[in-house]
Length: 274
Image (tube, rainbow, N blue to C red; front, side, top):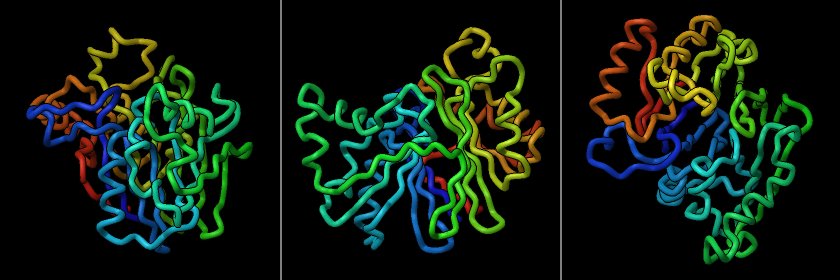
């Protein structure tokens, strides 16, 4: 598997020179599987550039392109109206979220509302592509192509989902927008057990987190603790605070790597092989 980071920022996009190296777009990943299929995780502003790359690179997958969402807060869906492949009548997308116990009872309605006339000139039904909206009851789903996806609900205002995606003997875990309320959450550690790669929310420093309890995020120190407890082989700290400049993030990354050498802070357009 190959993972490309198209959006690494949390809460809101930033367009400032001091944030260019780590990137200003909000959450979006492209996953390219060994079987030739692709999937997308989250639809923050990074999905705009991803869509343009799909067209420029002539991605031939037209049927059932999977877009998995951690949750539907604005910074994780706001790029979707600018996702050019969604305007192609030949394409079909499955847009999914972990389960039905979320407060989101109708996932399609969320996308319809953000594209209604008060907010956007083109409604969902006029985009061109066809969409299936999927909220499975079963937290583990094996696709026809042999990809296994396991979802775990995690603590965040309105709830969020973490995912473990497995192809063959390789796996990675995507766990953003998570708050560890009373110590490190056991279900997160269990989900990440012995994974090849853990992508974990690291919006705050430990000092910042003390002032932001209840906001739904983690510190990079907590990301390191999850990686250590789970036996994850590699760690990517993700969902950078919009106020964290490149200089600040580099300094924090050095501190993080002293505690967990196989770690890196996510950068836009970074590509990792799993």
